[in-house]
Length: 368
Image 1 (cartoon, rainbow, N blue to C red):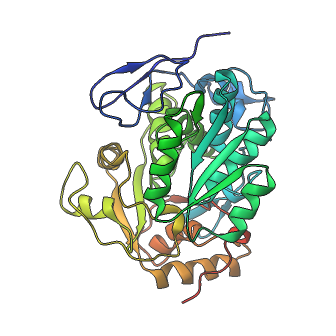
Image 2: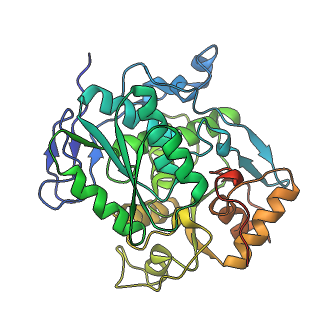
């Protein structure tokens, strides 16, 4: 088997062997990136390939899959003349997190740990649980109190153990990290493990293929921990670097106004999070992250793309969810945040795509 690529810390350059169970930089305990520079295949080479995200094999840092549930290749449908929606809630576990979870499960299977642990506000946990079930790996998912009952039910249905943490999303992450430091434990972190980002980047490869070798002027993306946005930035760099894209789209990052640390930092022109920002309850639980570990990378990616940050109110999220439902698209409230940010003219005629990341059945309608 081809050796797995090394990981490295983008902050201090410390390198970690590809087969290590280490989940963070041993020096600063920050998230790791992957030393991997793929060259995507041109459009004409994709004809006849498997109809899943594995059709982009050249761009993925893993060998041929053993655990695939057919993830990827979700539909792209118009909302207006300028805006289309990519229906990533039509994944095997009903959220976009399957794109990264399948790579984490493949990696865990190669590592042979005694157990897998993860932390989540719901969707990542359900996805990790499903792919661990597929791999026959024991899995424990740490979730904050208040996580949707339907998501907890789905995690347990896949055979994973749920650990409810008395606290917020950040507290659940800290609990999982304490468990991850125990021997023979694989931390399936969708934030710290760079393999997850190399899975989410296939969102953009699919858009590029479906749009005939181009991308819209704007990619509007929900941002909590930033895994979809950072994956998108990776894919754009790959496609542009390979000469398969003639221009790069702007990345517009969307946060709930109730929990918007990155938007606050952006407004202040900062390269990092700035102090403590206010945190209030939000319907957008999937992006309610007070201190995202990859904050510096997210801010830089948006800035380098010529993009911006937008925030949406709770009323805006609720109305956008109902508006999407009236168009036949029933998604969870977090998934409605991007449509809430742009549906009343913010794009000024630019072409754009929004991701609908999670199914409405996972959490139900947002109520006042």
